[in-house]
Length: 282
Image 1 (cartoon, rainbow, N blue to C red):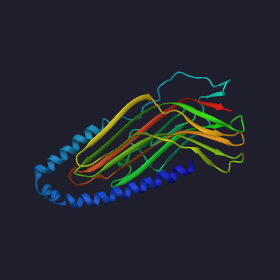
Image 2: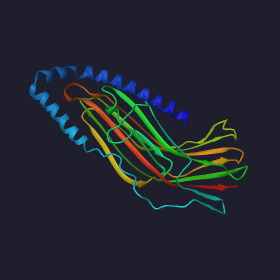
Image 3: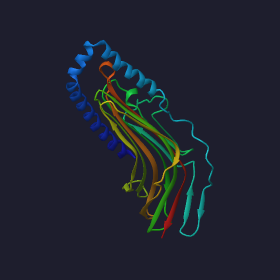
């Protein structure tokens, strides 16, 4: 999963550059308005009151809770097309983020547990910077898999439940953006761990949002089943396979600016793999 860090970091750098450029332009556009507000006590109080009300609303932002209890499933191997059922504990857990010191309000920025199958990514730029900022977080769990045949097709189908919350808010033109994705990635290597090949790597958008001017957008969903839950790939017993289920969250904003203006973004995606199935077609 090391190439994921480079991919998400490049996206985050681009987003931050765009955020800084946009903020400079907006400050020029709104400079006359700032002068007017600075000279008018009622206007300053009105803008600050909007900020106070927005912060009250922000305190209602949901945070990731404790993982619910779900019915248990036992690992199985079934005949026919050769079906295998994998359950926690899985083989691997992985987390990464754009900076090792990232934090988030109300929960860790990332977590993953191979014993439970749960993984969380939470991006909260306002908690980590006082100006224009962009960040990403990612987490997932993985399963080791080796086929039985030298030439076959494999169906990989994880049963995923997920929940999320996000909010983007803008005042006086500054922009805010956030997005969250679930993903399934199949990677193979030779028997010595070399010659890494990405067999399939689909990404599934959960949300992708942005605000400007005086907008506030948000959404929250409690635990639900993820609908896109299978991929197919060609496989051979001569190679080793690593089946990853993971997520990532991006967010960028400007933070606080003059007299309550600014932009703020945050979002998290919490998921659990209850069990996973491989079906081999030889």
